Length: 64
Image (cartoon, rainbow, N blue to C red; front, side, top):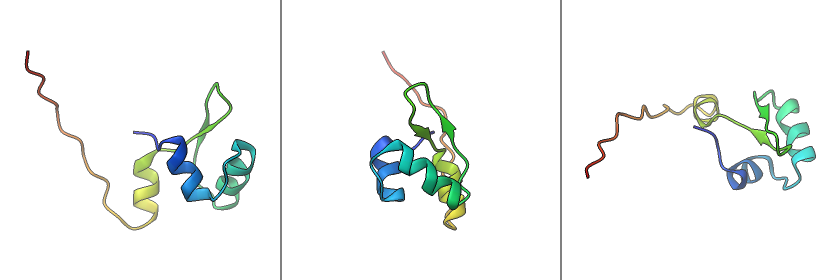
């Protein structure tokens, strides 16, 4: 659902959440700020923005 903190850092090129937020705003990526102060970015938004097709996750079968 959401990108990992490492993925957000890789995408933005910044480790500090404050710098990541500036980059996300400048590039017009939607995000939410979590209680930890870090940006939360939906994986599907990034995939769609980069021209890919977001995978639909099917139901998971859990046995026993």
